[in-house]
Image 1: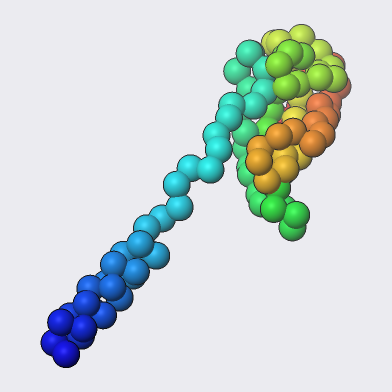
Image 2: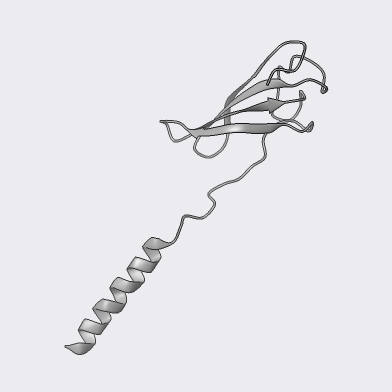
Length: 99
């Protein structure tokens, strides 16, 4: 009887410790162009994806539609799915810095 009780306590303790572990990194990725872009805000969306608002300085890699040279920034909005893949992205701005 004591062995069963001890086994039950050990089982409950192990189950609690396993449950208490924080989740690991599911995925990670850098987004933007090669010209020093940066996120300003990230929010989870209702569909389990993410929306990122930031700044872009170039028109390469993930960024398209940048409105000026690498000297000036555009606002950059990116929608990701739950796995981190880009669903859509938009550069917003004009001929001078827009952040």
